[in-house]
Length: 113
Length: 110
Image 1 (tube, rainbow over the protein chains, first blue to last red):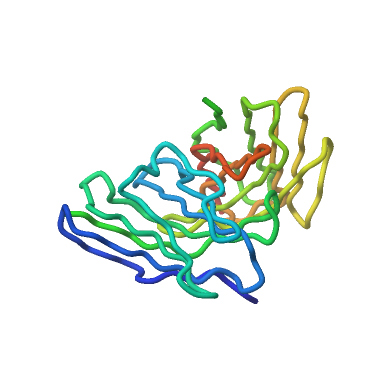
Image 2 (cartoon, chains in turn purple, blue):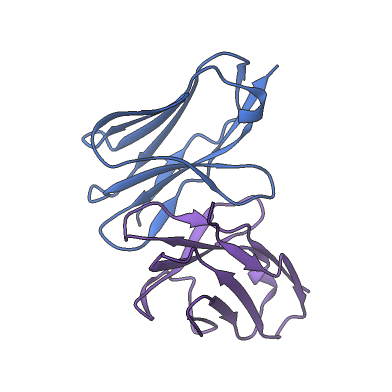
């Protein structure tokens, strides 16, 4: 069964460093998403991406964040200058229609020291 | 601010019983409704989605939607210890943003 994959599974970085989180969505899906979940808190929407552009973003997704689909398979989330409060699980998801089912990857645990 | 509210629990039921999980949402324009299961340290796993008022059944799971009351529920029949997890209600409106509730923790006692 096709699945969303994410790398790395765990990323440790120093405050102020740039990190890139990588995702490979399900191959025939057209909509891509990033979410984050701070330990013990809700899953929070960050951004959605369709047709090579951001379709919607939350207030969390400020200028420190960017997304890119550099090739036909990868979807990346970049955090330019990490803060302690960026420590969280980051989930990538994909779907084949805007309001259809979103399938989640296993997540990347980001720890900012 | 669009909200999705769930009772945090924990909800404790004996093995074989019916577990009933509830969710309310604030945005009347919401169109798609999802239930995810999340085990500790893992990603959300889709259980069911529902778009129309009424009931939708899939195996031991039944989702119920009442748009007039802005209410979604999930029933789990014949609950098993492996059903012990946090259940997330998620709602999508006319845009791309999906809003999650904080989740209800379910414990199924063997």
